[in-house]
Length: 317
Image (cartoon, rainbow, N blue to C red; front, side, top):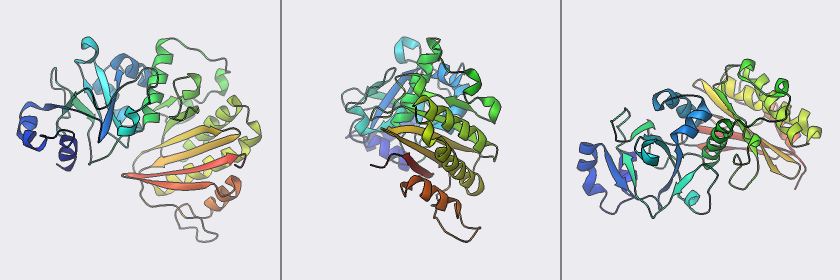
């Protein structure tokens, strides 16, 4: 109910239309003040997640876009269908990665009621339902999905040795978005990055290390490879030991000249704390190593459903 009222606040007469929304299952809303809507064609999203239908793609999108809602509208793009990702309103101003159409405050979009989570014929329905007011998708992740899908549709091949590319064979990887292989896969500030969704198991640390190694070699920063691999191992291990649910998200990005950023997202709200002793504390003594290798440039950002723990390795500012 709270998320429904928040969405309806996008219209001045929204609260009056609650009954109509529930009765018809969808309502035209104007994004802009509260959220923007980033739309990607079904063809591109399906190529990115290697699935052929919204029903099949929903589980993967729910795992990757843990921080925001996604719905599918079969009438978009002349009946070819499209995925609508609710992103921060600021993304509607100047953010336009290739393959993504962003609706700000000028065009109304048809938004399903929060409880509509199954196919409704020609009406839209939620694949990742809004869990609460203000929960939004990461624009970087939306750009990564679009970039990966476009690259696969175009048959883009990299010059990298396939033996060196992290693959699902390393662990129970749902899929890997190797963003830097495509120019569209950049952060909102224009830096390349890689993402991989992993199962929350000890074996995932090995796949995370391979992803970090692949990234730093791609960027010519081999001198920081050992440190970055040690840091991501600690972050993944902490998430495996102390988080909840079955998945975690590993990200490695080029944060600036000679600076590698690694982060791990999990669904535990308990924040990490570095400590010299006390093996039972979350993150515990491993974060002392992270602090040392990053020169103190690490931290944790709370999310509505969990947290993001990050560290920077490389040239100090």
